[in-house]
Length: 438
Ligand code: 5AD
Ligand code: SF4
Image 1: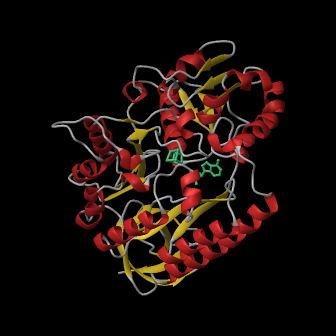
Image 2: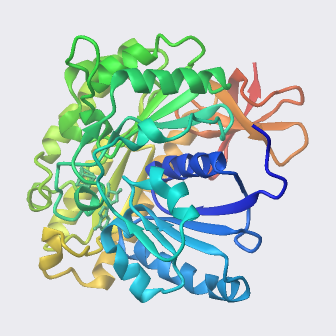
Image 3: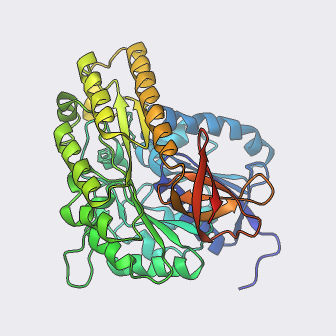
């Protein structure tokens, strides 16, 4: 195929989670097949696409402030197409056009394979369907756009209905992709130089795709992917504690390709709050699960998500959360102040005072930061593997991720992007490690 002489330029801004990063890459590929090339700024784009997140109010509101900033661009160039994708598009649909008439296209997370066709059309269009066809079947083949690492969505949606969360409404019911399609996508990525794949899903460890013989789980899928020649590293995110079955725990001990880092959100350490959140597990259940995972893979680094200030959270409940954090010892964590989301059960309940939630968040983050620092420091003197992702800022320096997902800087003038090397960790700084190639 010959490239058009003056290709149209597409700028995509991605908000929120890794699933959105993956979706943005696939939308870029779909638009690329329609003659668009990517550009780094909205100013020189023919189309601007905002791939949005609805998980917390702040994330959602960013869309409207960014759309406001696009007004002068649209005024200067009325042909500029502005599209809104992602979970705000799904949740608000045509309301976005009403509030922001400069928007041309609104497309939900299940309909974005139709984006090129929408972009070819005229006038304002909204598509927030959950179509019968599978978008993944209709999207063009993957490109390896992030060097040696790639995301691969294996599952979408969520049936858990945590009381605070919009995901079951914006992303819909849990759906798993068929095993064969995932293996084909993974092999294709490896053929393009990818050496590490992170499997994605809102409830990735609830994976139950169709495949030969039936009974496919995430553990089986990982075991199958581990057989793909040249695929050196596997990760998966995000998981629910209740879906960590025995085989998946065992896989952490059995599969050298499965990296010793696990993101396992617990949200709270108080049984009362966990019940109100509809999490369907207790703090004890979580702690026992962590024990099993550590028995299978003793050096595993754990991370989690926490919400503070959930409606009804008392000082005692919050202390229970701090106790759980102390008991586990996390290597990293994301923590959020509870944000009431329209349409979720928790949004009906009276909120905790904002200042109280702020001070709890600060206390929790201080504890997590200390644990993160301790985890990083425990790596000093150890030998780890590092997959080089890009050159560093200093001459001769390479940057990559360790098995434990720490960023590692290595002075290695002959190092190449995509190389997997052994490194001795020499020092720990605030956000990364420094090491020497062995
Ligand atoms: N308020 C605050 N945090 C939330 N999360 C999800 N919904 C909310 C909300 N309404 C957090 C959870 C989840 C992460 C992706 O975002 O901790 O695990
Ligand atoms: Fe949201 Fe809970 Fe589903 Fe995670 S498990 S996506 S927090 S409803």
